[in-house]
Image (cartoon, rainbow, N blue to C red):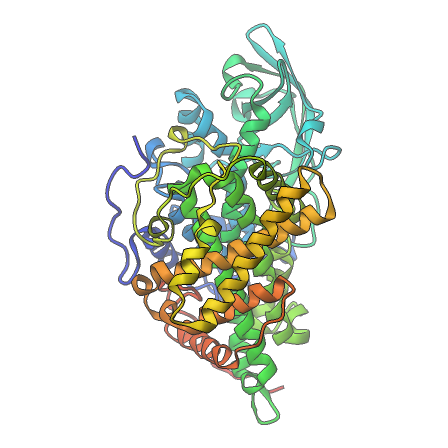
Length: 580
């Protein structure tokens, strides 16, 4: 059985098949700028001020069926593809990251059950999630950090099962969760265990206090302690001793989807900054007329589009190229949140002092968004953790003969077109990417296809040169964790991001239409990537001007700031210009 058991249902007018679910959710949730809505920016700020859960937003999310998208179709839910799920998460995060992160913590806990769980385990977790229960992934520990091998929690075999002892800390939904997947040292090695808290009872589980945070104040970031916690043999997920492998595999799904959260936040940040710049009068004219403001918005939008191309390719990779995700998910996790944070920071420059006020512009929502989005590069492993993963994958591949590219690029970059996505249990994650990397391997052919546009071809040829340099570096660096190795990994991630933009332009611009057909977005996107590589690149003022105009048109037409034509809920706008 596959996740796509039936053709996708028709979506709202203008939505592509795999984005139809997100389009329906968007309409159901209403405009986040409407202060009277339950899932509004204003409601999120009110909850944030109290360090409280955004209960009205959660109720709106449940009513819209958001939780059903966390459960595969094969288990009774609506998760038909990961590309579709990415769009759903992005729509949610446009409103409040605290909500999407809370649901993401449940997905993180449930994913290993979908992949490695037996029928009974999958059935129970599906029942819980579809019943609006929270899940938590008991991986992190205060002393261990990102070092899984330093896990202190123990699972000791006992008659009929295991006894677990240990403490998990800084985990999402730690206090409110009904179930957990827990990494523990066991015999013969580390194991991953499914704990049904509702069935355990007694004093075996103690919930830890919520941790006070700078951002995401409405999210339950806490922990739990296990003391003499007895579970049956059926609590073990998969084969004994495969816990580390399973955690590494489940992160390929969730770290890819973290990017969707940051993309949604970046869309809202751009919308707030654009509307402010249009209405804010300075020296007798709108702030948007000032060249530095226009440049900030254009470059922030370009960064978002680079992130979008990278994130969409990774999400679609989970559907059509899961064997590549040991590498691609880490690249996407490094690239997408980081670029989106840069977009939000550019918007903060446009807003200036108002970016930090807890009132005024958008009801003071920007300062919350600025704090919330800053944590996205840390979730599911920090940027350094992702670079270490990329380094290890590329160093290992450099010692072997390069495998030939096997995945057709029109399939990988066919954004919006339905594909038969294997159910998680039918195509499990791989620990390595297999040595072939179609995204960067096929850059040579892409450069040739761009020959009719010497300027774009030159920018792409720069990526090609850096790609070859990084390959040479890894061939000589071996597996050592040197500064040079991490820098080579960073450069590879940027080349990958630029290549995703080129392939999107070549393979999908006609089908997407609108902004995607404009040469300007690719010109500015590639320049942003090349500049981050530390190489000289001339500016393109005409491209910046066009992107600013397109931003205004997309906002006026209630469309997402995206290459994908996605209609938003009818937008609420404050008609009063700000003249002070």
